[in-house]
Image (cartoon, rainbow, N blue to C red; front, side, top):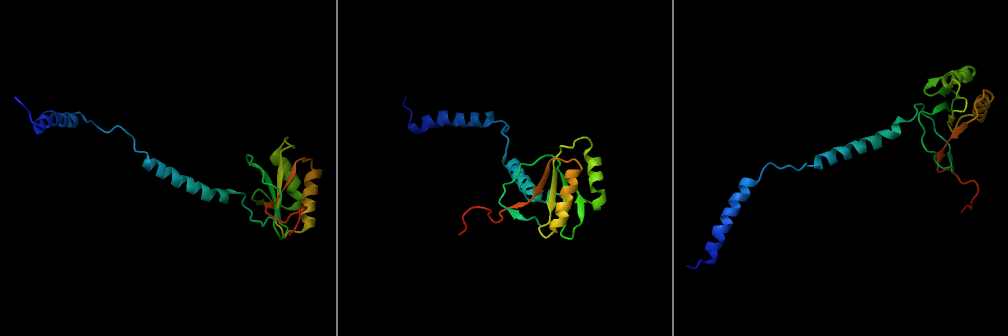
Length: 158
């Protein structure tokens, strides 16, 4: 007895389809698309909010051609506003109490770096007095913070 092509496919193919549908169980793959979407949103949120997490006293930093430093954990900053007001971290401090308060904060770690952030419009005399007071108080690592992208100090000018 001869089978036609249609009969051969229906006899074997039909049973395969039924077995395939019966054997298909629950989908065990994890859909990572929502996870990637959430991670990208969090990345964008952190990228936008990270610059706002810097030290709180707003000053207009002068621009220089010096490169940026790598971040360190919890730096000790002294900020000087354009009106001459002095801040340690975010707290206003009179000039006479600045060195003793820093000494109390640092304790026996006199080699801990101190970052001086002075407004570009601040008086040079105030900035020099603050840095001199820090130096005479025993602090050996005093850093002056500036913005990058200022005028060149030595190269050819066009």
